[in-house]
Length: 500
Ligand SMILES: Nc1ncnc2c1ncn2[C@@H]1O[C@H](COP(=O)(O)OP(=O)(O)OP(=O)(O)O)[C@@H](O)[C@H]1O
Ligand SMILES: [Mg+2]
Image (cartoon, rainbow, N blue to C red; front, side, top):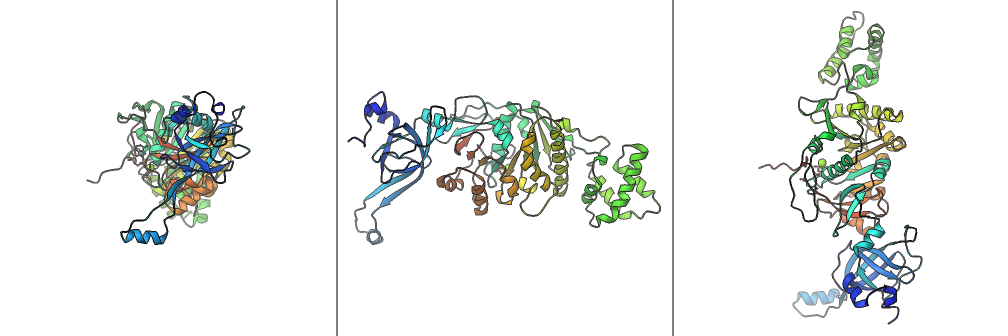
C-alpha cells in the first residue's frame, strides 16, 4: 500500500480516516503525473475551478485547481445505436479531472511549484480554506480593496491598491455583465482608502456613488448601505442637464489655435490659422486675458480680414458653453483623497473627445510637476476615448498616459465592453484585469493576449461567467482568481430600465 496511501507521519496529527473526513477526498491520481499538472479519477462530485490539495512526498500539501473535468466511457457509436434502438448495453465510464498545480509557499513565503512529480495513486482532497488562503496569498486583512469573495468559498479577495494604481487597470465585459457595477465596487473601496480619482463618465452612471444603496439581505456579504457624497464632487460641461454637477469650463485662452479650429469643425483649417492667431495675440498684448466673445468681436470689427466663416465657426463653438472667463481649477478636480466625476451626459461625442483630451493632458502635465497628487483616472466606455481603429482627439493622450503615466503616479482605469476595439497599446499596459462575461471571439482574443497566467479552463470560463462573477488578475494576486463580486454599498447607477 505504501506509495498509494500516506502514512500517518506524512499527514501529521490525526488518523487517515479523520483526515479524509475533514479534507473531503475526491479521487486518486493516475497515469503520467507531472509537477505542474496531473489527472485524477473523480470519486466524489467536484466542479471545474475547484481548489484541491494533494500531498507531495518531499513538500507536504500542495494546492491545485481543477482545470478540466470529463467523463471517459467505452460507449462506442455502435453501442449508442443499440441504446437508440431501445436495447440495453453495459457502459463502463469514469470521470477524470485535470489539475493545474498552483504550488506551495516555501519557508520564505514564496510561491513555488514542486521540482519533482507527485506520486501516482495519491489521494486528492478538496483544499482546506487555510491552504487556499496561504498559497493564494489571501490574508485575513482589512487592507486593500475588498472586491468580493473567492467563488464557492468564504474567503475575501482584497486587491492591492498600490499595484492597481501603479500598473493600470482594465474592467472588461460585454454589455450588461456588470462592468459599471464592479467598477463602482472598486471605486467605493478606493474612496474608503482615500485614493484620489477622476472618473470620466459618459452616461452619468457614477453620480449614484454619492447615495446609499438598498439594504441587502445577503448571507454571504455583510454590506451596509452607505453613500460617499462627502468625498465626491461632480463636474459637467452640461450642468443644465446634470443639475447636481458643478460647471466644467475651460478658458478660451488655454486652448491652442489648432484645437479651437478643430473644435469648430473647420476643414480648411490652415486658411483661418493666421486670422485667429492675430486676433488672439492682439488681445493678449492689449488686455492679457480674453474670452471667445472678445475674439469674435475683434474679428467682426476687422474690416480688411474676410473672416465670416471663422466667425460663424467660433459662434457655433461659443453656443456649446464650454468656455468661461474663469475655467475650472484642476487642483479642485484632482483633489487629494477625493473623487471627481466628470459627467459627460448630454455632451456630444465629438466634444467629449476634446474635453477629455484637454482634461487628461493637463492633469498629466500637472502631475509631472507634482502640482496635483497621484491619482487614478477611470475612463468608462474607453473604446470611445482610445479606439484601436481610427483616431479621436484624446487617442494620443491615452497612449502617453498608458506608457508614461505610471512613472508619474497617474494610473489608468480602462472600462470597456469592447476590448478588441480599445487601442492595444493602452490595453496591453493594464497589468490588473477584472474580466466579467465576454463572448465576442475578437474580444476574447484581445483578452487572452493581454492577461498572463490564465489557464485554458479559465479562458473557457470567461464566456460562461454569470453576472456578478469576475476573473481577476494582477493587483498583487499571485494567480488569476474567480471572484464573486460583492454587492454595492452605494446606489447602482446602471440598473436596467424596465420598458413596461
Ligand atoms: N455583482 C453584482 N451583484 C448584483 N447585481 C449586479 C452585479 N453586477 C451587475 N449587476 C446587475 O447587472 C446589471 C448590469 O450591470 P452593469 O450596468 O454594471 O453592466 P455593464 O456591463 O456596465 O453594462 P453596459 O455595457 O450596458 O454599461 C445591473 O442591473 C446591475 O445591477
Ligand atoms: Mg456600464
